[in-house]
Length: 224
Image (cartoon, rainbow, N blue to C red; front, side, top):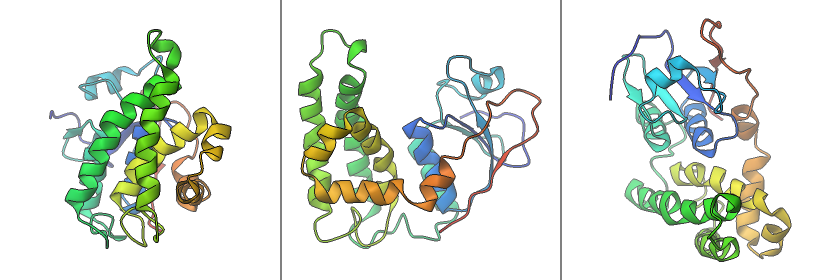
């Protein structure tokens, strides 16, 4: 962690379509945490962003005391531990430890296979269809977890749902016809509920690319 200039609001460096940045914005929305959102152009990163982010990746949050949080899950936990009106850290069908284990599986083996499937041209020696099959095994697990309930850990959304959904959406969009034919009815319903929600609409609001000196653009998150 490092310190930078204090701002009126916490500053979130973000990129609209990045699933990691999406999960951070979801938690900020649920916790009703207002931030100054700075949309970053990944092929031409602003110097202030590069100075703030140790990894030069989004999302990156600069808290009011200057602390830099450079991992999406850490941003989610930071926001929700400050205020958690919807109980995302208190699922009715498991514990936060259970959710973190599942998220770790998504961020590790599933994400590795997803990248090699979606971005096959970057891995010329890879097997995108084999990687799709590997990723599909995790999706089958999620589909099973949704049996008899609307969300992964109960009847209300929780941290695990919102940490996983942006990446499941990314997988589905890679070949939507294949995904829709795969037979994961519960998973497809879960994803559709997310994609048609007011929350998804809010966190996908378009912001102009931020430039140093621009007036603040506040992501006025609100729960519900």
